[in-house]
Image 1 (cartoon, rainbow, N blue to C red):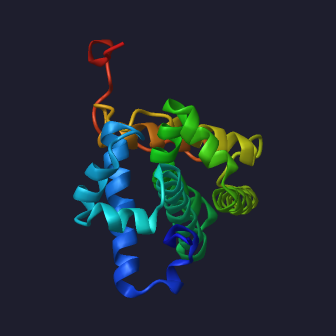
Image 2: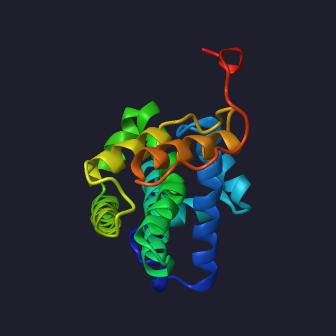
Length: 212
């Protein structure tokens, strides 16, 4: 029996595509709140579909996790392509990529907390292709920004990717979200740029604000 999880979206009927999108979005929310082992029935309920519809789209939990992670990578890659295409400078494209790479945060978080999810993500060919294309595009933007003189020449694409991964490793429900996330992204970007630093948003986080 062939599952819709292996069929391209374009080959599905409009209602099937809609159900698939609803399931992936609901699963992402439920995974973020309750972890990758949340009951499939709860995911179906959150998506507003029956459990039979869930299993027609995704025959098991691994297929659903794979679908969510593939969607995360697709979003991040689409945003990176748009940034490279639309932004007037390579630096502005890099800033946009760093800020929108958060689409991968759920996948990174799940892979950190669950060896099973880590195995699913690392063995998935579609996610691997998206990841490779995202890194290739990031490398182009990094080199272009260095040529235009806005990015330090003593850093490489690997440096940028690893710094981005630190942002992605934050707890999804970290209390210092909003301005806090933007402050950390700005600090990262200020470390990379050749010009003067920008003023940070929000307020400094003091020792009394920490919970560890």
